[in-house]
Image (tube, rainbow, N blue to C red; front, top):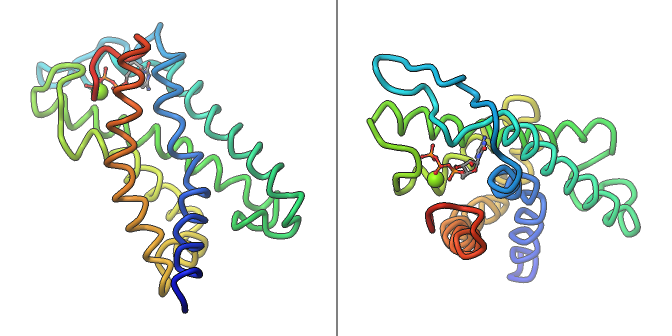
Length: 190
Ligand code: CTP
Ligand code: MG
């Protein structure tokens, strides 16, 4: 295994993870309207809070699936059998759904935990804010496509792809949120 092969593994992993990276930004753009928790509380605190809406859930989730389909379309010109790593088309559109809605689900879990800790909507929660969606995406995809997750992000040198994603997400999350804040899409720069 030489360096070039490891770098290819890392960037392939990052490419395949894009459908998990987009949903929460898309949710911030399209979100609003009916709250997922319908304003309800549990033990005196909101279940999820005003920052989590149905429109954000479905809009964000579908945005991730759509970008994934576009990526598969691009990859099909060069690699019509494996689509640069998603595998055979119909069996693996499911991966797109898992990555994308799993990322949304992770963000909801993060909000649930923040509310239990008594944190207000939009309050900064280091680590949780950066990694809740990564955890949700990997957890969901691992449940339905364990072999794919193992061979793409864990087996042998493929662990480099996972480490690369974990390291990069910290930087990208911060950068994307500052941009969203400047554009007026997000209320806080985190
Ligand atoms: N959003 C939404 N639905 C979702 C996720 C996000 O409508 N499922 C929108 C909300 O307008 C939210 C914004 O995207 O305010 C930014 O998302 P995020 O930073 O995750 O929410 P916060 O407002 O910071 O709330 P929390 O403290 O619960 O993270
Ligand atoms: Mg937030």
